[in-house]
Image (tube, rainbow, N blue to C red; front, side, top):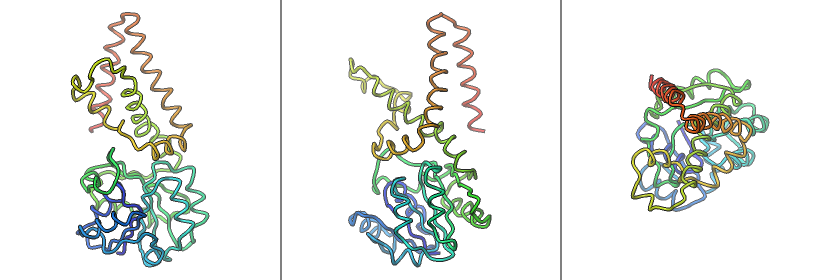
Amino acid sequence: MIITVVGLGVVGGSFVKALKGLGHQVYGIDIDEKTLQKAKDEGYIIEGYQDGKEIILQTDLTIICLYPSLVLDFIKNNKFKKGSIITDAVGVKSYFLQEAMNVIDPDVEFVSGHPMAGREKRGFEYASKEVFKNANYILIEHPANNKESIVFMEKFVGTLGFKSVKIMSPQAHDEIISFTSQLPHAIAVALINSDNEKYDTGKYIGDSYRDLTRIANINEDLWSELFFRNSENLLNSIVTFEAQLALIKKALLENDEQLLKKLFIESSYRREKLEK
């Protein structure tokens, strides 16, 4: 199968690295010539293109790993092979998916996807196939999709190392992602920015602070776009979080040990359930 990955940043780069050795003909498209050359020199792609219109016409599966605002532009400005499949890795879906479906050739299938894996660093040099290993993947089922294409994509991402593939609507995706992905990033940013820097904080941290703030090292362009594109869902998640934080504050203000322990017991139970 001929596969072209568009955008060889940390996510697109991880795709081409995970595809190595699986028997596909893999090509890359990126605006940065040095990135393309590096991917080619290291044997992850056969050839790299800054434009790529010709290779797209030959491609069986196009994986678009661009910022949300650029995905639609790429789809609108390219002609895809009839019978081929397009997928993406965008972290929000509702705002653009229907428009994408409207502009794509009826003989081309668009199965939107979201790998729940990544790194706080950006760029091809930080990409790794290991981030996909045992990670979760979400496939978006649109009424226009053929069942066969959904099944194909489910099997395909399994070959890349993903252990769990969930199929859901774009609306359901954006709702759960606001909680499981965007809210944690918002919390990490707020936590590290709340440091009054009275002390040399780095000399006093342990794993808890280190783990909670890892994702505060954030790509400001990408995540601003993700937050604003899903603001209604994210605001709802923030309100729900604030209500729980208020309960901890209430227990402390009222010296309510029973309430505080109840909250700890509930959180421990819920955390253990995540691993089952």
